[in-house]
Structures are given as C-alpha cells and as structure tokens.
Length: 401
Image (cartoon, rainbow, N blue to C red; front, side):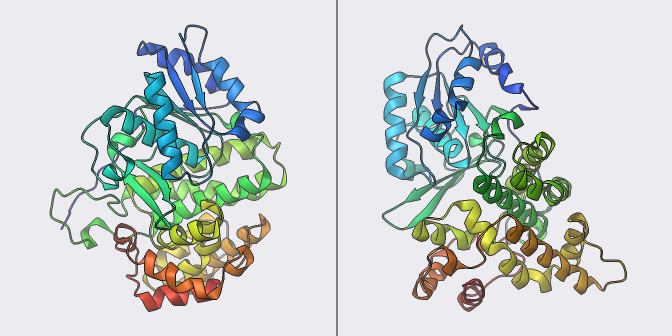
C-alpha cells in the first residue's frame, strides 16, 4: 500500500497576457539558439506561428517550423516530425498549439534524445532520462499538456490511442499566454473547456493512493487523489463553471479567456498528479473510431460516467455542485450530487457539445468494441472510484448512445 503522495510540474511555468514575448530571453538563458517549432497549418494561417517566430528573437541562429501536426496525431506523423528534427538538429523543441501539437512535440523531443520508435516508450516510466529541452505553449484551454507527463498518439492500425507517461515528458518551460487563445474557434473553446472540466472532476473523484494495490515506494502513472491535486481541481472547476460559457458566447472576452487558460493549466496539474479515469478510457477507442476530438468525446461521456460513479462519490459530487455555483442549501447530499451532474449536462448543452454518441456518427454495434478496448486500459480503469465490469461499461455506453 502506498502511504504518501508526491507532486510534479513543468520546470518553469510562466503565465499572463503577452508573456510569449519572454520566450527568447528564456531559451537564451540556456544558450539555446536553434528551436524547432511543432505546430499545425491552422495556427500558421491564423498568424500565431508568426508571432511565436518573432518571439524567438533575432539571436536565434536558425528556427525551423514543422506544421504538419494534426488532431490526435498518428504514429506516422510522429515519425515525420522526427525526420525533420534529425535533419535540422535543434537544441530546443517547442510545442505550439493544442494538446495534439504539444504531445507530438514531446514525442519528438523524446525520440531525438533517445532514438528508437514511439512504441519503444509506450506505457509508464519507459524513458531512461531527460529528453531534448522542451517548451510547450498552449493556444487552447483544455489539455493541460503544457504541465503534464503524458504524450498521447493514435495507432491507426489497432484503433487505439497510445500513451507514453514519464516525468521526463514534463516540459522544462511552459508559457501560458491567454492572448494566444483569442482566435480559438468557438467549437474548439467549448470542446477544450469540457476536456479541462473532465480532467478536474476525474482528479477530484479518483481513488486514494491507499486504496491502490501497490508496494510502498512504487510509482504509478496516476497516483490517485491527494490534497494538492484536490485544491487545484477545485479551483479549476470553479473557474470553468464561471467562465467557459462566457468564453464560448463571447470569444473576445479577455477575462474569460484568461480564466479558462488558468483553469486548464490547474486541471492539467491536478490530473497529472492525481488521475484521469473511466471517461478517458472510454473516449480513447471512441475518439479513434468516430474521429471526434478528445475534448468533444470526454465532454459527451462525462455526465454518464459521473452517474455511474455517483454511489461511491456522493460527498465529492455534492462539493462539485457547490464549486459549480449550484444552490444546494437544504438539499440532501444525494440531491446535491445530482445537481452537479445536471450542471455539467447544462454546461455541455449550452456550449454546443453533442448529447449522444449517435450525434457524432456512432453506431450501436460499435459499442461492444468500445467497451472491449477501454476495459483493457487498466491504468485508467483501476483509478476510477468504481471498478467497472464490461457490463458496466456497456451500460454507460448504452446510456450515452
């Protein structure tokens, strides 16, 4: 039994409007002059890449941009990015964009430092040492990849999302500039915001380290609920409840954008030091098969998994209800817990996420495969507050269908 918890973050975190302008000074402190930026064409077209290029500073001897990243990047794209990196020989990898771009940057930094193929490092704690210096700069408010220990890619052959988890993947520098999210489209704002909410709620309701069957001193990919992760998750939930709908309704609201950027980073710290669980496990095969974004899939599934988990986390859900601003005075704990689920459903509806799996093209006959694949992701299922059977997963999926 593990009787303690620990906490990790990025090497340095910088937050605030305009902080991107500090990029050159930060990378040059380490005498680094040759960054490779991993990003995508949409950000190039939106002018974000140009701004970041300017922020690398005139003293950079050379800068290369790889803009072939994609949503839920495949192993093939990871190898393309690696080839560019091997030819260019950067001294810094910069991940610019949403979680997909930052995760691709992490894998590039890993393979450039240690060689091999992506699959050599799948799972937990398979990286032998530090990766190429890594800077992550989010342009969405959702994944928290800028502070997390995870890189998720898509194995199109198996139809699964595959994760590499290691403390070595936490960036040496995270620059969170809310100004870079101002051009984020409404649907991306909505989906990434629901992703952040999922991170915070799953972290807050995860199993305790003392509930897990591990030897004292054994590290885990997700160590479980702890007081620091709880505090960060609570703040993230409050901020999302207050700001997500406004950020979607009025994308030019700088305050809402800033608060959502903060919420996503706090939720990233919470889940990467606590847990994500059954929502993520179910979304992985569903997202690959239906080609929905990670945030859309998580947001769709979240209330259904909450209902399944409620009997084991009534008090925690009642607290979440208060975090989200629900009026629960005079209610029973169970009534307050139900309010939390209803509020999540309301936010999901108000920001325009689909209600059901069939709304994103899912077929009933696909549900069995989703259940079969997700139950194999033990690092996520084992940390869920209720240990689901395959029948339980089918019940959740049928409810969400």
